[in-house]
Image (cartoon, rainbow, N blue to C red; front, top):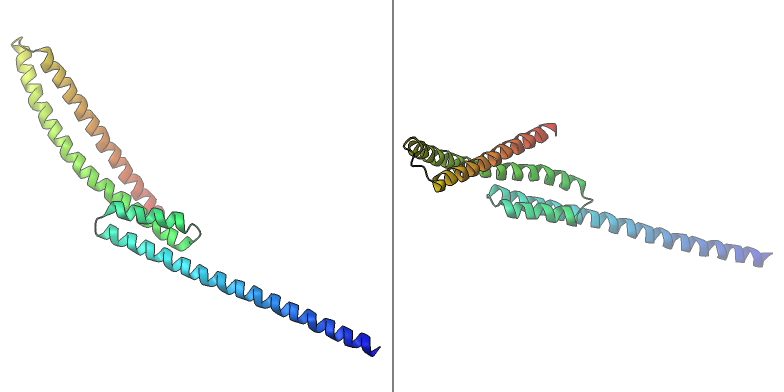
Length: 169
């Protein structure tokens, strides 16, 4: 009887030691997971801040690259990704505004060029001296102007869409 009690006591102690080791292993794993999560969050925030700095300096391509890197490397860091989404909208808005300004200048030039060419062709038509080359040039100039106008209108729609999405947040 004493032997069985000693055996039971020994078995209970062995089980307690196993439970203790399991608990320590579990605790160590949890601590490592939390520590890694914090370092991932910190790294994701660092990438976001770098992208934001690039944006503020006007380097939109580097800002886009930073945002893409954050999205691919840290897909589970939700708060940083939310910040990246807002920054992405800001980057795309700024890029569209810059492109729209450039396109507006091109559109104005194309309109002036078309007006001058149209007057010249109209004068030559009235004098019955219009050549096929002139008419072809007029048509091509009009097509180029229409293409630039379409690009301008598309950029305007993109800017309105981004503004709408920003208001929804």
